[in-house]
Amino acid sequence: NEVSYNLLYDHTIRSISQYSSDYFLLTAGWDAQINQAYCGPASVAALLNSLRFGGAFGPVGAGGSVSGVSPSSFSNPNPAVALPVDAAYSPYKYATQRDLFGSCTSSHVIYQSDQLNGEDGVLIPPYGLNLAQVTKLLQCHFLSSPYYDASSSSSSTSSSSSGSSTTKAALAGEAVQDDDAFLTDNTGFSVKLTYVDKTRVTLGKMRFDLRTALKEPHSRIIIGYSRKALGQVGGGHISPIGSYHPPTDSFLIMDVSKYKYPPVWVPAQALYEAMAENDDCGKWDYPSAQLKLTKEMKHPFASQTNDDSENTAADAGMNWYQEAMGVLGCASIPRGYVVVKRN
Image 1 (cartoon, rainbow, N blue to C red):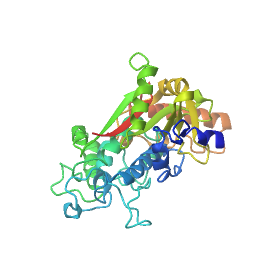
Image 2: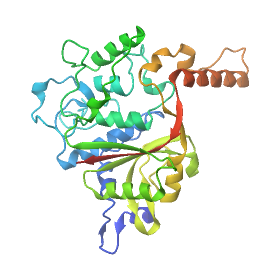
Image 3: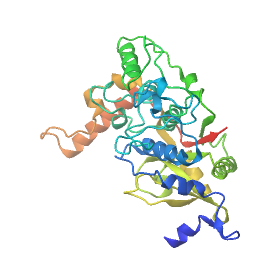
Image 4: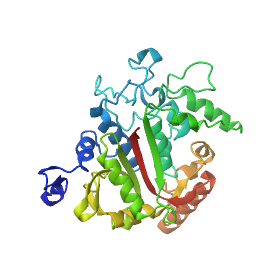
C-alpha cells in the first residue's frame, strides 16, 4: 500500500533512501518460489539476478557447469558471478530456480534427481535448504573458474558427473572428500553466514550488519527466520531483505512465497527474535545422508492404507519423519542471515 511504499523513500532528501536500492534491484529478478520447499533457491535466484545491473556477471554456466559450458566459453577469465541462462530467456542471463543446480551443488549442497533415483533432494526430508546450504549454493555461483570434479579423470561438464561419483563413493561406504575450501576461491565476492545466537550476536550487531549491507551497492542479504515468531502462518522461511527504514527501525522482508504474503516491514527487534528461533535441522549431513533414507522416510506423510484411521496415519507419518531426521543427523541451531559482499 502507499504507506508501506513510502517507507522506501527518505523524504528529507526527496529521494530513495540510501537503504532502499536493493528493493528495486531485487524486484527485477524476484520470482515466486515454484513450490513450498524452494524458498532458499528462490531467494538465491533473486539475489543473483539483482546483481545483473552492477557489471558483475561473467559467463553462462552457473554453479558448476549447470549449462555444460567449457572453459573456452568464458570470455572473461575472472568473472565475478556465473549466472545461468534459461532456454526461455536465451541469450539473456537470468537465473531461474531450476537452473541453479549443477555438479558443484551436487557435491556441496543437495542431490538432484540423478543421484536420488528421480527424487529432488529439496523436496524430501529435511525439506528445503538450510542457511548453510544457501550459503554454499551462492558460493557455487561466485567461483573463479568452472567447477570440476577432482575425482573425475576429465573435466566436469554436466550436472551429474560430480554428484554421481560422490554418490557411488557414499553408497560403497567410502569416505567422501568434501573440498568446501574450494568454494571460497571466488572472484571478489564474499558470502558470510551469521547465526543469530543470542549469546554471541546482539540486536545491535544484527542491525549494523544488515544496514551496512543495504547501503553498499554490491551487497545483498538473505535471511532465515521463523514465520510463527512474526505471527505468520508456517514454519521456517528464507527470503531476501530489500530495505531498512530508520525512523521505524524496520526491515523489509521480500517474501518469495508471493502467493502467500506481500513484502512486509518488520521491526528490527521482532526480526532479531524470529532469526534467533532454532531450525530443527539447521545442521545435517548433507548431501550424502539422504542416500540412507528409506522410501517411507522420503515420503513420511504419503497417504496410508484405507484401513488406517486419519489419526493413525498422521502418527505413523510423524514417526517416519522423526526417524528420517535422526538418519540425516539433524541438529537444532538458530537461524540467521547471509550477507553477500563484493570485496
